[in-house]
Amino acid sequence: MLMVRAIIRPEKVTETLAELSAAGFPAVTKVDVVGRGKQRGIKVGDIYYDEIPKEMLLMIVNDDDKDEVIEIIMRTAKTGGTTAYGDGKIFVSPVEEAYTISSNSKGL
Image (cartoon, rainbow, N blue to C red; front, side, top):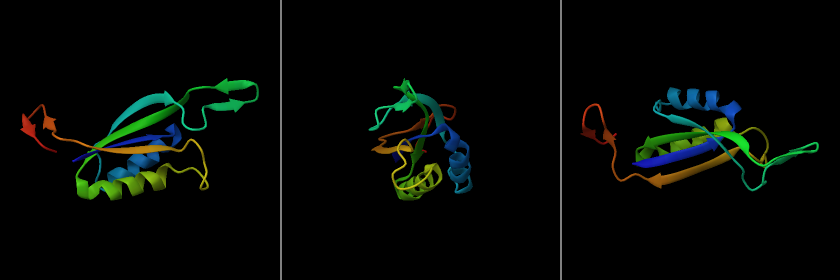
């Protein structure tokens, strides 16, 4: 099992979630987050925004599904050309165990 964490622009969340669900990946946790990437925030006129609102999608997927999930997120969360700063990041990490509280069962 793997945890996929995708930090994306808020305006791309609805489309991304719809595409994931249509592909058979409906289980997602969504969290409002703020932060900045390599661009170190943005400046609009005289105003500097140090922290930019984003959404973090968290998913636990089987190892075999990782590439498909990442491809869907990359395709749907992208806003423009090859260097559209601020589109987000995807992190993948191993999950050793998962438990469902309501059924006391182990696994996905």
